[in-house]
Length: 169
Image (cartoon, rainbow, N blue to C red; front, side):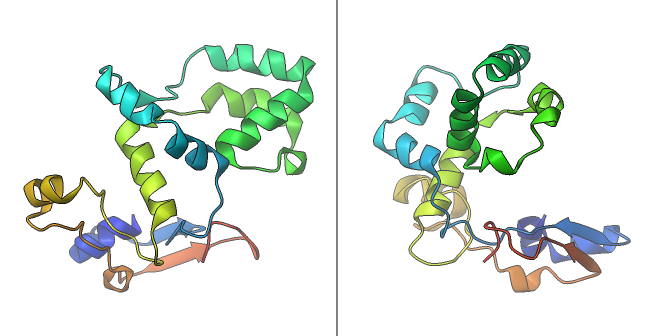
């Protein structure tokens, strides 16, 4: 929403109030195992080359995953930790059936590539997807992706967050 408001500042006038939960501005500082692994093995590109544009779509397999987790807890913790980069020991494991019924929620391979790009930025900027010079020219009209300027996201905004959360800068 912050990115959208930075590009379309007038959109805030459609809202009584924008309630943001732990707004993420940059993920450059995060050390996410899954993105490191995906960079080393070109899985996302292989999926796209095969015509598969979904990444971890939500399937009924999630409940089967929960059943496995209930029997082999540490393996489950390691898998969830890999994908979500979470410390599962901090979670209420009794809620796993509910959580796993909806997660992973799935996304596009393009979105995963964008998150991977955002962890690789050299500065704490937030910018649109980088298609490469030619792709950027075709999509944006210049060789680099546009930057989102969060200072343009003005209006009635209420932000709620934890005191310490790794996703905030």
